[in-house]
Image (cartoon, rainbow, N blue to C red; front, side, top):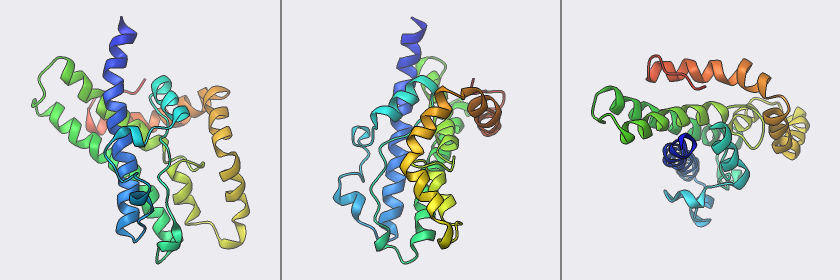
Amino acid sequence: MGSLLELVLVVPALLIAVTVHEYAHGKVAEMLGDPTARHAGRLSLNPIHHLDPLGTLMLLIFHIGWAKPVPVNPAYFENPKRDMMYVGLAGPMANFITAFVASFLVRSGFIPRGLGYSIFFYIVLINVALGVFNLIPIPPLDGSRIMAAFIPSGRFSFYRWLERYGVLLLVLLMFVFPRYLFDYFLTPIIDLILGLFLPGATWR
């Protein structure tokens, strides 16, 4: 029964987090001159357009994961490396803004105690966790786009290697070395940010 209730709480929060994250990527790319996301039907607030099967499974199991990457064509950008960094930052920043708004509604008493209150709590939790997780500099996560902006052109071969094996590396970290990824790295950062939004709240 507890697992079913948690699923009821997690799924709406998950859909909101994934949707604002991917929409922000597409919108910022369009603002910088790239219409690819709109042409692909990804500049949408419909969460179905953004769900990635493996990333969604990770979200349901660990409350962190990824969505289907929004297509971006750097050829449209005035400064591809810089603008790809902006596009990469847009998703996590959208998650943190969403978490801030939801936490304000919770702390202000606007949301009454009950199921709705719990859903908003999970909206804060999952948006913070998704935002932090996606800042890891491993493709296809957004942190890799940010990292790429600072890699000298002559040393880009390592980044290309990461692009090829990034998903495999992420799955390996999550299932084979979860203690190092979660306990030593992600959890302290998520709890720090979560505590700023909802004092006393913890991720795990």
